[in-house]
Length: 114
Length: 115
Image 1 (cartoon, rainbow over the protein chains, first blue to last red):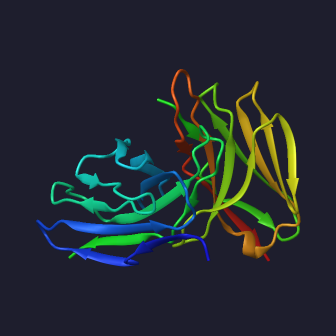
Image 2 (cartoon, rainbow over the protein chains, first blue to last red):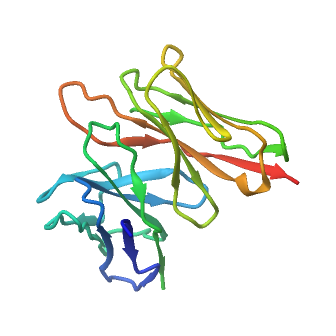
């Protein structure tokens, strides 16, 4: 089945450690996104990519990094510079049509600090 | 700063009633609008999208758009306890001179349908 796969479902980070969240899609979507959601809050955009080998910062990019080497993959690294990483991380993707295409979401990764 | 605003709720309705969820947006150039449902602890799932002024119906759901008032709403008829969730409104950013696929999300309205 086509879809967006995020892994792992739960992740724990130690002090000073970088961790990488995986996002893979087999929908042949052009654009991919990473959002952060804190309890009781909306979605905040971390990074997005509209084409392979190109990505843009969102509203809260500090302490995060991404790569887009393949169309189907958009991993997010939470670096040790992100001092408050505990949150629900959501990956989304859509076809590129100037904002007219809905974004579809993976099941998310919950990140906590040990 | 482009924004989408929603009342956080909770909006409590009895089973079988019509639930009305509202959203306003600040980007006058936005052309596309989306409603997502998010159950507690889960990821958002798309319910409906609307591009044109007026109403769009899909089963028990009706999306309404008024671009002059910059207002979007979602009506849920015959509300069921299984509709209890947070409903997120999102607007596509306008594309003055550029191309973007980004959406701006509201913080969501919590709907509680009472049996």
